[in-house]
Amino acid sequence: MKLDLIPLNLPSDNVRPFVIAGPCSAETEEQVMTTARQLAQKGCHMFRAGVWKPRTKPGGFEGHGEKALPWLQRVKAETGMLTAAEVATPEHVELALRYGVDILWVGARTTANPFAVQELADSLRGTDVPVLVKNPVNPDLELWIGALLRLNGAGVKRLAAIHRGFSTIDHKLYRNIPLWHIPIELHRRFPNLPVVCDPSHMGGRRDLIATLCQQAMDMGFHGLLVESHCNPDEAWSDAAQQVTPEVLDFIIEHLIVRDNVEMTESLISLRKQIDEMDDQLMDLLTRRMRVSREIALYKKEHNMGVVQTRRYTEILDKRGAQGSLCGMDETFVRRIYEAIHEESVRQQMEIINK
Image (cartoon, rainbow, N blue to C red):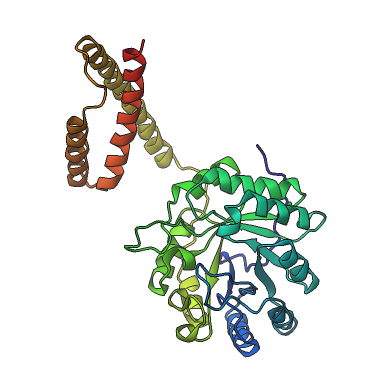
């Protein structure tokens, strides 16, 4: 699978990452213009605002729809910033383009629905507007890729992905857990696809935005989509995750953007050590699976079941605690042993069922 892409050609100052900023919702013309002017004064080149805002539950503010689009036109006319809005239906696309919205993005709930994505793709056929695609609500990389492929198949070549985290019942820290390995794998498969981070929806709290922005830069993300409001505490939607333009400027100014420099001899040497250790790990896993197959022969001979729950729990608990003592996250170590156990069970099943 390949994506036929051309550069987004979005404005930036060549020092900071490109940033698309603005309020979660376009509430009033005054709120939109005040926020836009403040962002423009801080050097922002692209302004975002929610025009259509279907909420998880009915009853909240769901956006003004077409009424708010002339406000975005005024933002562009008075500040020179490009404008961006979310679209979820062909009607949204038609209206956004009619009012001159420069950048469109597809929301997480829409990305999760291939029927809706295909309708958007068909409505965008023949246009040259940049389209940014958020990851689906659930951690499904193939669904995310599918949405990008559908749009690209309709001729949309100025594409980017937006990583906004994934929904989970665990809300201990993040609104949507990052699961950074998923966008990293997306970029590995499609190196020419820009990936943008949405720290606002990921964190759900304004005090997490700076850290998430820096983490995105550390992993080579190309830009940021951040919710910024002239008076966040009075916002009509998602007040807790919005920052003022002044705070956003402070965050961006203090980001450390890493250089993609050529590898030095020291880095090459360290990577060789990693390769050698990976070879050793593969050898150990091979030997471990060999013993697992010997255990399967014993179980078959003595008519024993494949999975011994007590033994499995003992391994997870022991190795998880051991990993923690060695400076690794206990959940990470448990996931490794869950995967090892799954493969061990698969191989034992093959032997027992012969």
